[in-house]
Amino acid sequence: MKNLQLYLLPLLLLFFQNTNAQPGCTDPQANNYDPQATENDGSCTYPTTSYMPHQIAVLPDSLTECSGLAFFQDRLWAQMDGGNPDRLYILDTLTGGGTRTNKLMNGNNTDWEDLAEDATHLYIGDFGNNSGDRTDLHIYKVKKTELPDNGPTAEVIEFTLSDQTDFTPAHNDNNYDMEAFFFWNDSLHLFSKNWVDFKTRHYVLPATPGLHVAQLRDSLEVQMQVTGADITEDGRAVLLGYNTSTGEVFLWLLFDFPGSDVFAGNKRKLSLGSALLLSQPEGIAMHNATKGFICSEKFNVLPPKLFDFDIGEFISGPDLSEEAPRPLQLELYPNPATDRLDIHAGNSGTGKIRLQVLDWTGKILQERVQESNGAAFDFKLNIAGLAAGSYLVILKNKKNTWRAVFLKQ
Image (cartoon, rainbow, N blue to C red; front, top):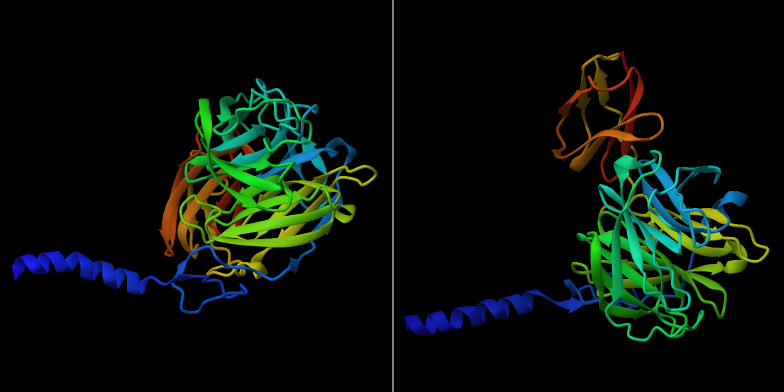
């Protein structure tokens, strides 16, 4: 009897696991939503949906070919594509004005196409490949602490694509162009720009310097050429692009996927209208769970533009509505300070809290990250090494950002 019980126990556990897990479409906004489903199987389909981003400004002549965006240090960073200076730019998110930062010391803009970032580094994707014949694909990895310093030096990630064996040049007539990537789960995720079949392929690449092979994971019928990508801290990805046959611009929302299988969850397509209104969209960056920016290149007589957008209404899930900022409870003392600064943070919410001290050029001088349980807590900073002057303290969580200024004597 004991042996029989030991035999039946795993079968019973498997039975109860299978009866509790009900695969299906779990998104209430989908056409085929199944209220009984408890496990998202990626089968959701959605109604045709149109959305028009808000135009912030026409970009200046110095940024006619904006091809990649990233949002960090409370700034919107941009790059221009091949043939332009190997420099980064900071965009004014209210006016679209651009401030040029200094060049990458060991960089060469063969065809820069996108920016990605993790907690400590910025990645510059030099992998534009219009003819599908490049054998020098690479990504520059730059420490954020060196930005916007004079002449940052980058590490280099070189790579090939695991499924490419034919390098015959075919200008705008191949499936191995590349213009989009982001960092997620300790790896870089790249998305091809397929000129021929209007799909995109998902590759995964180590985010470490050296020579690597980007491994093909999956593909998706997107009905466009993908030109930009990004992902939020909580794992909601976006793919930007346009259809070269129709001129229609699209934004794909990829969310509620397992691990790093970005095509295995919900896949919702938004039509953003015509390139006649948006010019040629190339860069995209999220700056919180639902809001982001898009930049477009000059397209014939159409000028380059900067847009913002909010996808919150299209994505189901918890914690999507942006909370009103909590009452400011960020105290600095003594202020002015000499050798030590005490920072008291109250009512900062739960989760990961990031504290930064910046000078007025935007350079991060000190940074700490710790978990908060919602209670007040204190930071003690050694500022003896700082030069006399004013400094900015930024405290941020996933939803809100607080700022305060102190004077170092």
